[in-house]
Amino acid sequence: MHHVNYRLIGEGVLGINFTLGSLDKPAVSGDEEYVNRVSNLNLSSADYKLLSRAVKAIGVTDRFRDVISTFSVPAAETPPGFRIESTLLADGLLSIDLVRDIGYDKNGVKRPTQIIYSADSANPYEIEPIARLLGNLTCNPGIVYDLFINNPKANVGQRFTTMEEVMTEIGNILGPGCDISIEIEDPFAEDFDQILGEIETYRKILSDYRLVVKVPHTGPVNRTNVKELMTGDQKFSSRYNEPTTVDALRGH
Image (cartoon, rainbow, N blue to C red; front, side, top):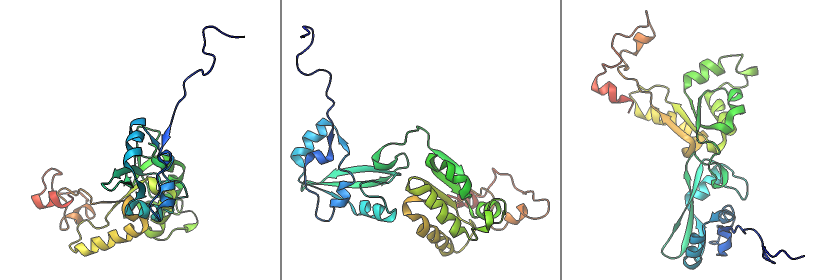
């Protein structure tokens, strides 16, 4: 039976998706595995039309390769915590890059929430249940030792004995999608190489991509008067809003 008010062939709307793979352009030699990780990314019809004419080959940047290697990303994926960008070079090479951006989940998809959550903790057991929600974790040596390592109720079975062990475990739990902010242990250290050495330890554990080094904003507190907060009545003789110029700029 024919319906006079409908077309005989073809009903509804056909949604057409163009992908990077739809361009049918070759990958740069040696980059095939990397390009495959982004081949299913959608292109607008306008971008598809433009790139079909302009692109001769597709490759990736050195940083793209380094990110994949650093985080041992599974095949055919890009990691969370990175935005996928591309640059069309003069020779027709479309160069794909990974740019640090904690607003993104894996494969260039934005996080499902409009709010990126942050937590202050050094307890892997507390962090694990909420790891997927976090975009930043903040801790410092005091938190790690006082509230976790030296706390038998938190450090079950005394499994962890050093800050390096704790930070390695936290990094494994959070994965590449979360920044990890660590305050330096001695903000008043006169030997800057000492500070750099401390940072290097965390950099090796967390990588340049995730590590955020925090220098506490110490205000009027300095190496000379900090003992006032730890001895006697533990009251500070200066007001919080009366630092010297040198002390006020120390944490910046």
